[in-house]
Amino acid sequence: MRIGISCYASHGGSGVVATELGKHLAARDHDVSFISYTTPLRLIELPPRVSFHEVQIEEYPLLKNFPYTLALASKMAEVARMKELQILHVHYAIPFAAAALLAKQIAPELNLKVVTTLHGTDITLVGNNASFKPVTKLTIERSDAVTAVSHFLKDETYRQFAVTKKIDVIYNFIDPAQYDYPISPCIPPCDSPRQVTLMHISNFRPVKRISDVLQIFAKVAAVIDARLLLVGDGPDAPVAEQIARDLAVVDRVKFLGVVDRVSSLLRAADLLLLPSETESFGLVALEAMAAGVPVIASDVGGLTEVIEHGSCGYLAPVGDVEQMSRYALKLFADCLLHRSFAEAGRKRAAQLFPAQQIVPQYEAVYKRVLS
Ligand code: GMT
Image 1 (cartoon, rainbow, N blue to C red):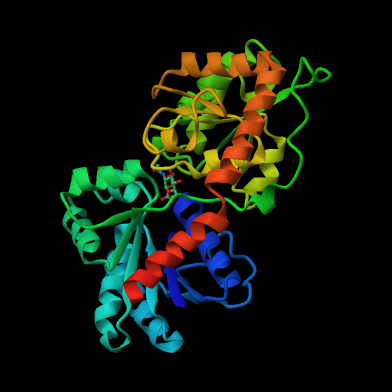
Image 2 (tube, protein in one colour):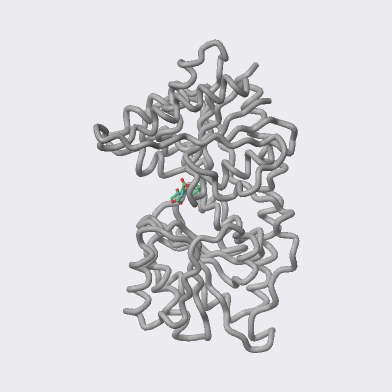
């Protein structure tokens, strides 16, 4: 099949899923054209059958804000004609689905099919904003197929938008081949004494509750020798630094910024913290599980579909930093429990969320809309 993909290219789960999907589709003999304002983070080298098409953003004195959606729609139609695309698969409803529906009308001779994948904040936060809500609803209704990354998100879409459209749930995925390294050495007391590493990976938006990450860490670090690696960047990164100072743990917190290869970095972690306000899936929790890293997260949204409480991680109510730090200390006090969580997470990730199982689910949606 010939598939165009549009997504947010900057760091963020939807861009990662879109890019990894495109690469897997190309490896399965499909032609994939990425259409975006910049090269997606995980598309540094273009594999065979993958092309990248840049949407030009130009400033005009008359326009206060550049109308990106329109430029994207024109580019989508241009690429669709050039590459004879059959499908435009857009990741995140706003603005990609709207642009794709316009492109479909610009090039009616192609009979393009629009597949929209909802990732979360496009429904729970951004797309639900009064300025976008009617457009988001229209794009869901008019797409040829809609997928959501969890049952939680599917239900939330029905609840918030009162649509009747069929929504297929297709989970985020990992490539187990990227995690074919041994699970990291046992933590103390099994192992010789060493510092344990907690990690948080995100785009540092308020929804990630960075303050909770630091509070949990401070409680753990008050009891055992620990460090915190903060991976990613975003508006709350400076806030994180200030909180670390206020909690007097700044000397044990390292800010690593944006890192491309999360799978390698996770080798350094003994525990992942994801105390988000909401999370439609929580790709980073799945990546940690695949790496054999136990996860402590909020018991919200799609996280409950990803993490099995008490087997590969612990879930606690949003904001309950006391309980989350107790869970962390429980894991660090029992090296056999920690090891069994690490192994269970890796097994669950490989059994339920491998690319080999998930990518064909997208192919089935493409075939359905083309038939
Ligand atoms: O988490 C973010 O803020 C980034 C966001 C995005 O749209 O890129 O991630 C969303 O999509 C990911 C991929 O499907 C999901 O794994 C994340 O859970 C979801 N984020 C939220 O729901 C907050």
